[in-house]
Length: 307
Length: 309
Image 1 (cartoon, helix red, strand yellow):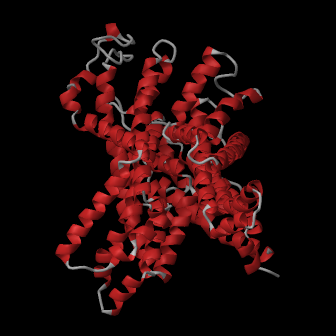
Image 2: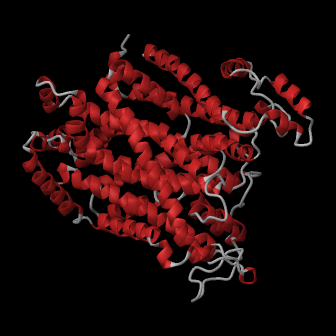
Image 3: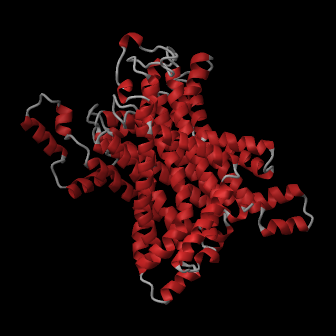
């Protein structure tokens, strides 16, 4: 898939260095074109709605309901099912599950987005210099990547959390580290494809500096596959974060987080099954949203699927 | 051909050593010293110090690392801080459980993923294709542990068809394997579908069709044979994903495997156990990747040609 994308974005039309003013309008046109193709796909639009929905509740959590609702305990009302007053019922301490879900979206989304972005920046940088400079630099970076990839990501995150201690920040660090190797590989393969392009050679021949080539040609032209991978990674990271929090390696109580909510709910499977359904459904909504959007963007970029 | 195999095996030795170094470095920074963990908070500082000295943890990083390598080459993975027993025996005992869980999940998810992926690609844009891709989309958005809990709730607790936890009988494997299989088949299906679709558009397929070859022959002989290559590579990755998934799924279903051992050991700050379990899982993954690579070389005529003789 990424090679198709690379093909599209490196098509001569987009590659010709143009006068800055003209370029801007061309970029706009390209964006419009991608959006036009994106909105044709129903799954992609559903994904967009789901993604915006999750981002919306995370941003406006405090407006939807005060944070105090998700930590205030009403022991006498513990494990009461959904009602008009408490839409999603109450947990084992009588805390409002609706408020916990709404505010939990913040940690889940924050971890998902920031670990993906961070691993993208670090992994992207390493992958790009490996591809761009080749030889020894490439060799060192890729061999280290090979080593890190031998440890399955979840296990690597677990080991890092074990060393640093369980907390939200450490979970973020752990997930970022575990995601870097695949990022390095992805960006490297995209950039290697680009450095062979004629316009990069042309830029080199008229004496453009490495930095200019990287910022002017390589980065803009590799944006497509990078955005797609980034979106997909957010979904993966949200899922991994919930898994690690379920194991007690993530967000610590009493702060709400979707995975942690499920971990608490496990003991009340029979008496309060709704506590087990609702957080899971929200994780699925978030992951599905980002996945569908990633798929949609990837198709919109694909020239083979044009119209 | 054997040249390639030997080269590939030799190549994985430094990678494995690198993995040991990685895991060792991460765990080196874990808080708490073994002396006070073993002897407890009531122990005298002098006793703690002497035990730490005996265990060698007061030595410089590289000395400790080389001692560790030396010891694991002799099959000594250290003593568990909690049980005071050799870590190795505990791991060897649990290893088969994790192995079979990951193995069966990999096999089943590959079979299911490949079959449905092919069907989906051949019948592109049909109702069947749409439903299969939708199911796969959902499956890849469901957290494995939640799927496990849901399956447990329905099949074990409500219907009572299978045990909810433990692996005293083989039935205990059903739900964990099913959970990992469902989760693992989705990416394989999507990959298979995409690869087959790509091969179907290839020039040689058009040639085969224009020659008047029957559609069945075109799909099964020309398209699939070529589509198989990237799919085989994904098998190794599937195993890695199953291993990673096993870590969490074992906890959900209370299975005595390496994953659950790791999680418990992390909670108890039992560093030698965490380190050894992680290394075992990484080594297993490396061996499976090695086997897949070698298999791949046998299938791909290009590699075969390169190493002829």
